[in-house]
Length: 271
Image (cartoon, rainbow, N blue to C red):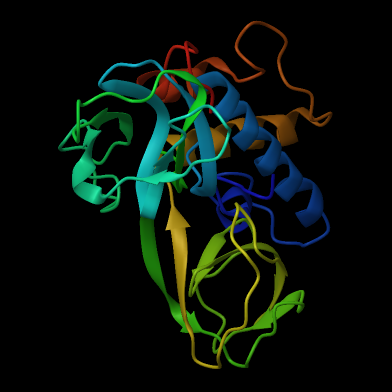
């Protein structure tokens, strides 16, 4: 998984490790990525935004429990009514309701939270009973918070390019996940205005982008970011990079305390 909940520069900064050289950058970024996955495991959810179609067992009832959901694609809810494993029935937006109704995950605000269930409204108001009868295509995760970067692309980019050129050297950093048009791009390194990147991450497709294209940076809840920085810094200071043993996924006590409000029971649905 190409994702980090904290930027490399923040980990190297004066309030964390206070490192100025670039000799450890690859190792430090790997630590941040590993800690980010430990956070997912402890919380039984993920905080990056994943574009995917997921299939669920319909219970023949009105409500269906879901993993954290940010939004549903246009025409993204389809069902298999006759057990042939073909999702032939498309549901309109007003055929279902996403719950809780005031979750507001697409705004990325301070009180945003994900949708966690979907309720059937149309017809007799039930999801078709059976195994793998409901398909939902959308964006999955805690919420979608985007910050517009000061930089823009400084050159056209083809889908196969592994590097991007920016208009300035400002606030895009290694460890950031970017959104350019509809493509998510993970930043592995930066040298001045040049980025080394992974293209088409988190279920998006690598695509062409124009010179001057707007860049957005995904942001995550502050306790998630702080827990990632704290744990990665402690692993680096320990020298060996070994996580703590025990039932908490290798995260230290302070990090677990920060994450407590975000943990959910691992019942019924996965991340």
